[in-house]
Image (tube, rainbow, N blue to C red; front, side):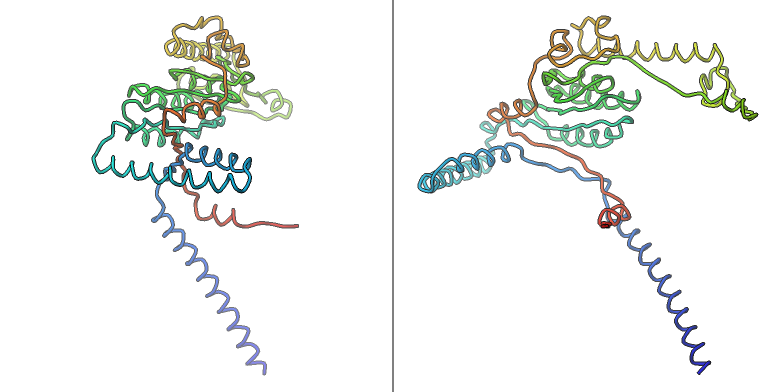
Length: 333
């Protein structure tokens, strides 16, 4: 009996080890296959015009009685059928004279590091690959700014649209400040909601210093650099007056570059009056020339439905398999 018991215990341990190794191998194989199959990302196209028209029809139906709904459905079913038939005829003839232009709608909600620029560049590349004369781009922008090089790249991506001669409109419903305004000013036209926050053309940097705390606790901090300004201000070292002055000089230079960029994109601005680091609400910004008109992106889109086919373009990057697995795991109390 003791032999059987020991053998059973040995067998259980062996099976446990084999099972564990098998699970690890399966996870590794699954991850490898997922990485192989996954693309870098995917462009999603959504017909905003159709979405709005469908919503409009639903609201119209809700206001009718049963008899009116039946008559209305027949009327529009016949109309849709005629439009589809006409589109097929034009497609066969290669006749594009009656085809409306496209308004491509992009969305940018910026974080501090402007990491979203990686998706923006893909969306712009996709639009530029197909955009033709008469098409336009609308960017719905929301950002309070962040790191200089991140938002500088985002602004440069928008300049690609301008360089191709495609009109660009930026709509700001909430905020386009600092780096956000650096992006907005690239547009041919800026639309802002009356209480949207606009401006903040300035540069700010702050850094804590723990040097005195280290000294009180008899902790030495050594910092070695090759070049007098390799490190101007530090977290733990003792900052020098020369380092502070150099740091301030770099801030001033960055601010001057920011001002020059905005002035170049909007030459009519009194740049010295608006580049004080202050921000204004939409209506105030309009009076100062920072924006061109007041309104919301929703009203703008609805107005453009008459002239354009309105298409939303969005780029999404696939999650890693472990992230997808974690997102499906729900913990309940």
